[in-house]
Image (cartoon, rainbow, N blue to C red; front, top):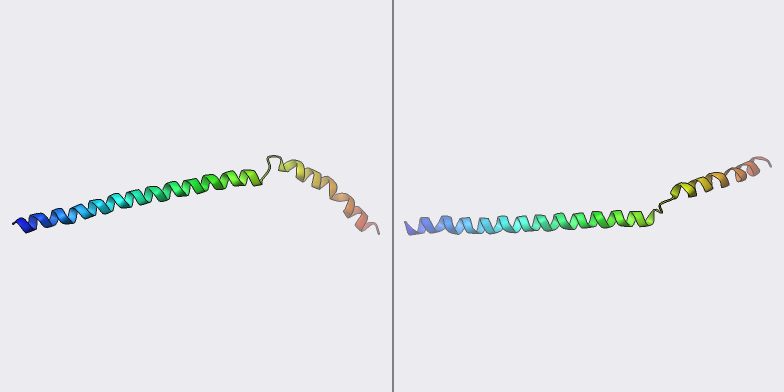
Length: 73
């Protein structure tokens, strides 16, 4: 009777430890993923300047004269 009582305790303790380790691993992966997403959004904001519309308007104003000069000759 002592061995069957000790076996469930031995089998339940490793499962509890495994569940705790899995929860910690999942939490670490989640925080690592969130930090990568946050850093990626910050880098995208640095790469893209806030006023890209001004650059597009300047390009739109600068583009037609070469088209007219190319079609004239």
